[in-house]
Length: 193
Image (cartoon, rainbow, N blue to C red; front, top):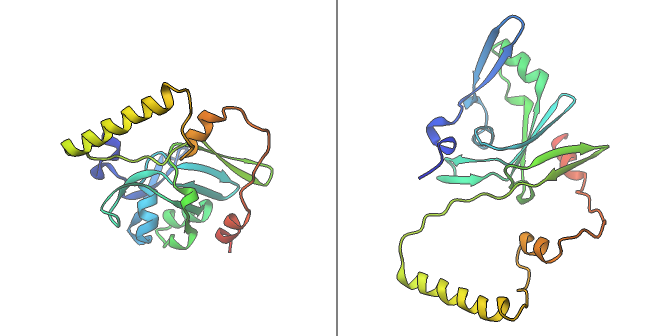
């Protein structure tokens, strides 16, 4: 089962421009865009920020026809806002106002994207995944064995396991050392080429 907002049938297929003063609206089909950009625009819980005329979208979760499954997208999409709006209103091609790059660092959904001075910060979020489990007694026995081993060697002895992911590191080192690591500016520069 999937939550309704992840349903393929509920995905948007068009861009919508609304003039709240004149109460007019214009639409444009996403099909003129490359498939990768279409899929990213259909995602839910994208991380986003607008800086002047550029709207930046990172990741999001949704169905990918390319992958044949739901995924957390690894995309950074930049949209020239005023040009896109003008093209939709005039029923012109707007595909030149979209750019996109892919990188695993953008595989995030549900975070908050902020800009401080000239640096962008992505706070929180996750690489969301849904798995299907078919009953398997051998696998269940292996999981039980791993759980018992974990209990005996770590919980009862008070020895934390080695860190294998970000959450483990946060749990083991809950306080910051107040040092900052900034993302490289070359990623945004690539989009602005």
